[in-house]
Amino acid sequence: MGRKENARTILARLSAVISQPVTELVHRNPYELLVAVILSAQCTDERVNQVTPELFDAYPDVASLAEATSDEIRPFIASITFPNNKARHLEGMARRVMGEYGGSIPRDIKGLQTLPGVGRKTAQVVAGAAFGVASMPVDTHVFRVAHRLGLARAGSDTPDTVEQDLRRLIPEEDLSVAHHLFILHGRYTCTARSPTCGACSLADLCPQWDRVKRLPDPIRGLSKKKGRFWCGTRKHYVDHTVPRVDRTGVRQESCPRCGSLNLFDTNTGRTVRRVPDVRIGDMQYGRPDDRHNAS
Image 1 (tube, helix red, strand yellow):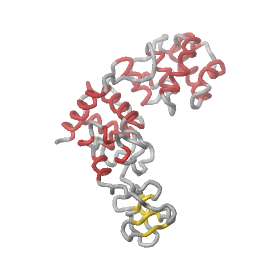
Image 2 (cartoon, rainbow, N blue to C red; image 1 turned 45 degrees about the vertical axis):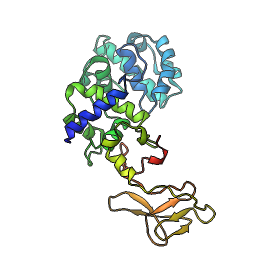
Image 3 (cartoon, helix red, strand yellow; image 1 turned 90 degrees about the vertical axis):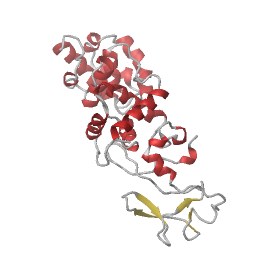
Image 4 (spheres, helix red, strand yellow; image 1 turned 180 degrees about the vertical axis):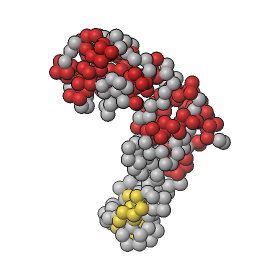
């Protein structure tokens, strides 16, 4: 199966299980969406949705927000991340919209990026969700899912390069829906630490799941009293490990006595082997958890 055909199959399957591929930020208009997306930087949608009702009651439109100072805005968003910076961004954004755009939120990515607190990702989210602009903003979920599914190239280590990879594979008219499908899949199924691979509709298409399946099965009956780890190669217990990078570049834990990577945690019986996994910004390698927790 070619990469474009694979991408089409992935989107079709995700569409079958995700009935509403839309943002989970609660909003009623482009102004509210823009504010919510600015607030969502390094913060969960759930938390943002908790603070925006009172904020929008106080400042129901961009004109009223433009008349507020950051000190007046801050108490409404005190419980989210970086409230001081975000309050300044909201003040600056609203005043620029009023002063340079006649009170109307810019409808294009370039115009949105002229606003304080709005980078390329935020601009794409707003342009796509509010105005139907074809966009593929890459956040941590999209980045992770694209790499695990093999849609991003191995060397694509930034959101911009992953976006380019996805744009090559996905038709322009499908980009915005694909963006939301990847986010929701990453948020609820292909999570960073405990993906539910066994329940995933994409498991047979996923290179990451194939790697996880090849991990050794758990060993039952190991003695925690005899050591912290069990070496499956030489059949002995050890109390510590020695870091070692394997031939694929993944940092592993090895047996201090024989150098074997075939180690098991005596608390859980599970292998300590890692498979390649990526995180946005640092391309760190790690284990995306294991098939034994999948349901």
